[in-house]
Image 1 (cartoon, protein in one colour):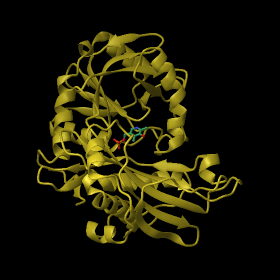
Image 2 (cartoon, helix red, strand yellow):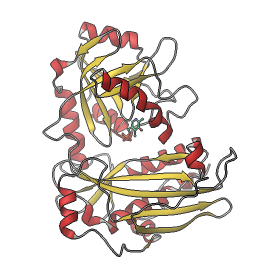
Image 3 (tube, protein in one colour):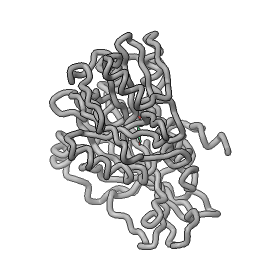
Length: 375
Ligand SMILES: *Cc1c(COP(=O)(O)O)cnc(C)c1O
């Protein structure tokens, strides 16, 4: 595989300039836009434009453009609608106090998009085009970036197989799109812990499956267990690896960490069916920077249960781009039910959360060079 594809080879200005901007002739009126930005419910409000690149076998990626946000025209036989050949990403654009706009480790998302594309037999989009599409959209819809604590423009790149063909083989046509959605703080009324149900009945991914790819199918598989958890009174599901002596993997859309009473921190080791979270890898680095002992381990459900019941685990949290860090207040399955840290957010959890959000929002030095300026 070409390594050229996997690094940003040009400046942000150069990669954004490849996109032809066709302005929406009926953008949202300013007052309406400002009202929508003020208190958006996650994922319900979208900006005026979307970025788009088209792929055809033999031609490669062409027609880089930013156009009016709106419904897609798709042949009913498009492969994505039948065989789920789809991948996506999620990252944010943050407006700093001086008005500049930044994203957090976007090359990591671009590289993961390439790996996800390989697994789903979709065409690989270069890092240049991934970041170019994001930068071009953010620059066009810059007025859609909300300001305020923990507000950001959530960016959703995704790729779909568009070829009209019902035979089962990788599609010969695809589209890469990016849409943008202003988001406020994930937790209205302050960070509060979530209750997690560990599913023994369902897995979201399995050995050799698509768990490490960011694809819609993994999410479809997580919805029924999510309903089951909600029925039991829980907020989200933690999935196991489906093996004989099952091990903890992650939530439907977030990785997990456990803080021990002795201060050590542990997270499930990447197994091939766990999503490689950018937040997860950043948190691992921030923990190491603090000289805290952190390990990536195979954590069986049996050992987790023992550590929870003995009080060896003092805090637990989930992490991902949308919520950054979510404290876990309670973990349960059919056989056990444990409240963690009295159901309150833990100190270490909240310290790391603050450090990460401060870096993302330009309030603390970016000592690892994680921020990329988009505008
Ligand atoms: C996106 C995602 C995460 C979090 O990844 P980040 O890069 O930190 O946003 C974790 N688990 C799953 C299944 C995901 O899809």
